[in-house]
Length: 620
Image: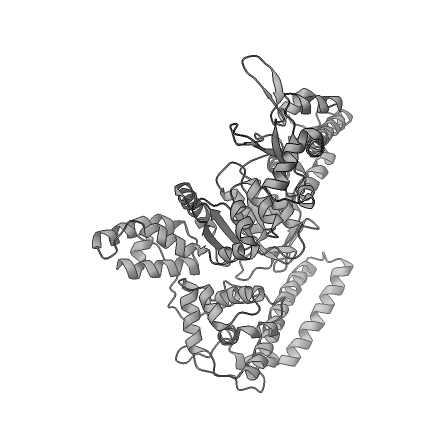
């Protein structure tokens, strides 16, 4: 019978785990400042109140009070007992679970110590290899590699150091001898892919020889593998580490660690093909590019990207191979395109790649290309219409048939509704037919979800005549819709909107579109109405914004500025009150069970006073 799991192993397992990775493998996380948010999986809710803190490695729900670490989450979410959760988490970290057999905990503690020592020794081996390649680059034997980086690629020393670039010497056993002298056994060097053993003769030799070397680092900055590029016409041109106990190609992205080290908030990630594209772009100041490692972009890659940013841009060569890769990326990303996420497809001129193009035209023009890349919806429609003449009924039917599996893959939301509506118009088929028999499409023509009108809410609505042109007969304009129209008319007034304002994009179509506009204008503070409309031209959002531009409120700039300021303050207060109310309710429930700490008692009292004052002030 299996013995107990040593506590030392459990502690190390939790320490090694990244809670954002664990939770993100089960939930769709959205970056909110330093933390992540999601709809809580432990109670029904419409607005995200579930927060994941990667710095402190815990999660907390402001709605129901659920909290814990990576292990607790697996137990609660997957309905696993403690042992099963430990084994699941261990598999995710590539670790084996030790057991204490009988009454011999000392022996098992020794086994645990040995396992930790093995993990540390593997990491030491990879660090020694990285340092060896870096050192070789600065030696006479590495001059060819240094010339390649400096003269052919225009890379500066600071960037070589930042990405830890190196050179593998033109020798069969240089690294092997170096690591063996440092006490690293040959078996470990083979296990980690640094050496190759020839099957016919059993001969063991260095995997990377006479190549410039690109260390691959995980999200924590640990070296887990290498990529190498030849400096002549040898084959293969590029060579990667094989999968090892440390390295899984389908999960890792080259350059992601370096991108996260840059100051400021990471807004988007550009997915390119190779290491050299990543470092060439970084040399020009574009530090948000990553590359897959000899594989197509996988769902795991994209989940990792969307845990960090809300926008991904795929970059492809303008040849047949690039076209095929784009189609594969489209099929992979569709199931992940929930509202609030964005994807674009950038096709480079024939014969160019990011490395050559950014050095030729500079970062400014390249970033313009990225900004003008095709939104997912636009690319999907072009992809589906290739080779079809939509004036012919047969081709309309072919388009409708080709559309169904892609629409089925898309999650329900605004993007799916708009694409379906557009395809219905150009094929002449009903939206339900495009979605398949029995599918239910949330109607974009349904009334906006009921929300209190501006003239009835808190300080902003008191003693003000805020009724404006109704959305529909008998319905007052919601505050989110009014703010959206004002910003379409006066985009420069984005400065009046609090930078911390975040709304639930799923609460209504207006709010979803408003959040997209806020996100864009915060990145482009000098945008005009024309620039705003041009940014989304040819997209469902563009059609909706154009409609808003025609309906924009007739207010002068000064009045609009004041109105935007007041609406922003109101929405900020409203979201703050909602969070306070959720936390208050959660603490009350815990109090009823007699489980509150002294600090929580103080917090409960403070929240009660705050909410009471708010209710007195607003008359609610």
